[in-house]
Each structure stands twice: as structure tokens, then as C-alpha cells.
Image (cartoon, rainbow, N blue to C red; front, top):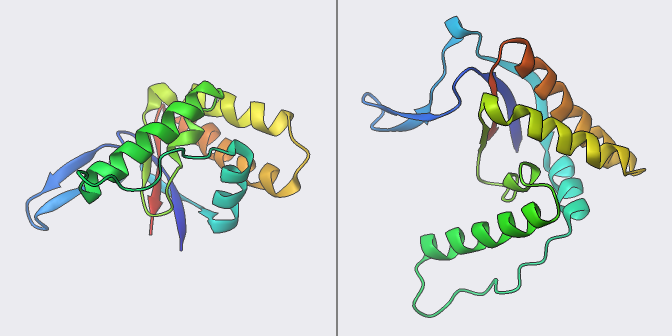
Length: 151
């Protein structure tokens, strides 16, 4: 299992009437394509180790449903990632949740990847950032976004 990295002009979900569910807005005629790069579990763990975010209230509250619990954890994780200066990288917070970056967010994602890479000597973390940097550079070529599809 991994995140499959794709460059997508408009990485948002749209309703697919045939499948009766939301799907990523894939349009090959706009240049959407898979990069042939996977952000695998090792990359994911290296990013999580670098961010080192500990959720203070990870237990589910009595009055909280599953979805509310997951949203609360995600919000807390994203808040701490933003405070640490890694708002975009913080979106890669959960192994089973795909991540989208709009074209307008690619520069911020690239800057965070470069910041992590420049402040780091861990070769595994550098490999993980190189994958995302490659994706950002490819997205810039067509003013596209990036989609990390959890498979």
C-alpha cells in the first residue's frame, strides 16, 4: 500500500453518477497523469517522525461518533503541523486518507519540502522529500495540483 502521486489540473472530487460516489476529477486531456512515484509507508513514517506530532486527546470521547472523532484528530494534527511551519506536509497525516493540493498551494508545499530537506541529514527523509519535490516541479510545468491517492 502507498500513496500514488499524480499531477492533476484540478484535484477536487466530483460526483460520478455511474459509480454513485465522489471520484477525483481526472482529465487526461488537461494533462493529468501519474508520476510513477509512490509515497510508500516508509516515506510516510519518515515524515511523521520528522513532524513528531503527539495528539493530546487521541481517545474517543463518550459523546463522539467515529467521524467526529477522526475529524477532531485531523484538526488537532493539522493545527500543530501549521504551528511547526509544515501546514501542507501536515495534510499527509493518516495512511488511509488521500491528499490533494491545489495549484495555488504547490509553492507552499515545495517550500516546506525544501525547508525539511535543508534542515535534515536523515537519508530516508530526504528520499521522501525528493519524491514530493519532483511532484511539485512537475505540477509547476502545467500549473496543476497534486493528488496523493491512498490505494
